[in-house]
Length: 453
Ligand code: SF4
Image (cartoon, rainbow, N blue to C red):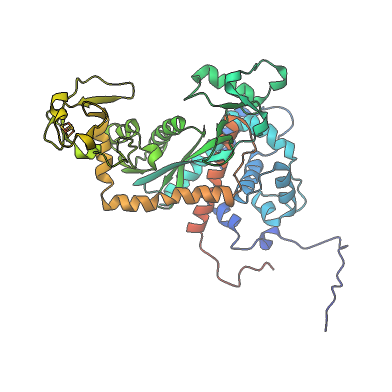
């Protein structure tokens, strides 16, 4: 017999317990068990006045933001609606059924005010990393590093050619992001080459493009990941520019060492991190094995004799060519931190190998980096079995970036300015670590225990 629902919705009193309505295997239960916000109030204490009306509890806002970043709810207005309607979200935020959810405008005020001044998102991120370490998920043996481009909240039509110059004193351009950009420019100056276009909305974002795709304004999310369980141990926002990403890699490695007393034995990265100065910094200054392909432009593709055909003699500081002749140097370095080695014109003029070696010049030249010893270390490592494992481990960062963009929907930023990007990446990385920790550590309840009564 076909049933018909007959209950009304006009009951005035209910016997209701929110706790029993949240499934035992809900992701937020696992996160709640591992999240410790006890120090949050103490950390924020100096940024609140001791008089006046009580503010909205900062822990409530942090919990709501974590819900948003864990479930890809990026818009603050929608986040408030979701927390209002979703019982699990209410439970995680410690809200009762009838408690009011803060207005979305409160988030903007706090995010750009007290939260940023107090660096609370970094404090939260580091507290979660500490917990991951305490649970044994971080070993500190191998770290992987990578950067991923995330679109800025800046329309490409609001960009102007950088060469044209911008009058930043124009009151129409006055905004938080512009003010922050000008402050940073006064402090550090322009990093790297001048970009082709500059955004009037978010000038710190970099004009960038993937090959064959239209250009856009973007930031880079830089992740340093422990390869044991794929926990993000540091995160930073930079403009989408390689020079900044390399400097950021050094900053993150040193910061992790300082904060958590963690220094990896090996660092895994792609060719972008394989420049000679970076390899020298890792191998010689930090004693970290660079499991990174060497950035090498000296090899020839036209079938002529490449640099590998020449043997370097460390003791005598000279190369020997395939014809047994020597290439010497004056020791003078060029602009690019390289030393030139030259063969003798006399040796080359009658050499049978000249057409393959230096067909268009009277002598052969070889450029050797002043950091060549570190490049050789990386080349040696590249032939080991550990390196093959490192290639697999590097995928853990790529998986995290794919998760960030597809599941957490952070393929475009909502906040502007470098500090906006930084806040968003810190919260997203915190959410990713919490999700991973909950999935690794919280046991699944037995089947049949999930339905609320
Ligand atoms: S051309 Fe000169 S450098 Fe090249 S193999 Fe012959 S002698 Fe050596």
